[in-house]
Image 1 (tube, rainbow, N blue to C red):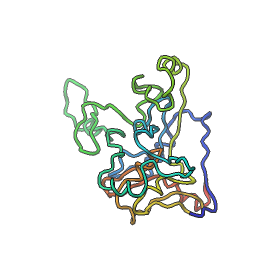
Image 2 (tube, rainbow, N blue to C red; image 1 turned 90 degrees about the vertical axis):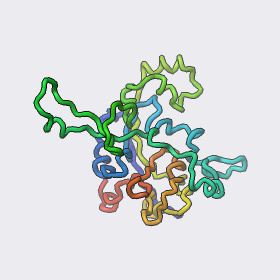
Image 3 (cartoon, rainbow, N blue to C red; image 1 turned 90 degrees about the horizontal axis):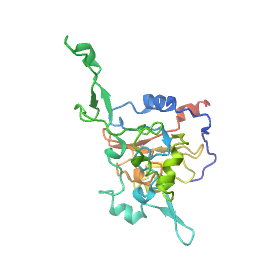
Image 4 (tube, one colour; image 1 turned 180 degrees about the horizontal axis):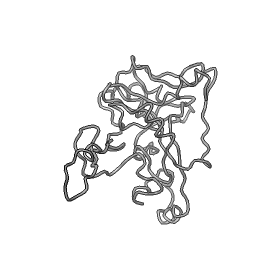
Length: 255
């Protein structure tokens, strides 16, 4: 790759109020389709917390990003070409749907069609994958909103591995922050190195990382290779998808 320039995005964390405007706008434009209902190219997390998907920062678990060897060279954490090819049909480092969440919507139509009765009708959640009613929702992309989940889950934040949990508990009573997350369009993307079919590439003119949908063969090594877990598999199309940095706007000269 010979990158002539690298576009970037600056997010001022001092001004982020956790309103999720960026998340909802991105969701409505890019992933409000069958197959990527669970995918959020942009999401906002409350830290400390394990995030979305669960424990995405724990590279001991997911083996994303790069690893530097003793001689100074780097290679993907998921392994070299031979290990990738050996696991190509059974990727052991792939997040499951439970690590993300089962996407759902509410049965709003029932509010309009319910017959008269003694009790007010309610809009129950239904899975967008199976279409079945969900009795209990136990996770989501903003489940830890404003430290809303149990401390047992939040204490697994990889950034606090060496911190005593009692001290961590006292610390989180006085501190929290919002962290907007999206694809970093890395200078040296691990997803590009992890893809066996060569479908992922970095554009020379601006450094935006994209996936060639015609070349993608659904090996999903890119999902494992990304340290931020910002590549998602579209189960409907059988292709991987990711943030495209809204390049139509970039090409039009818009911010």
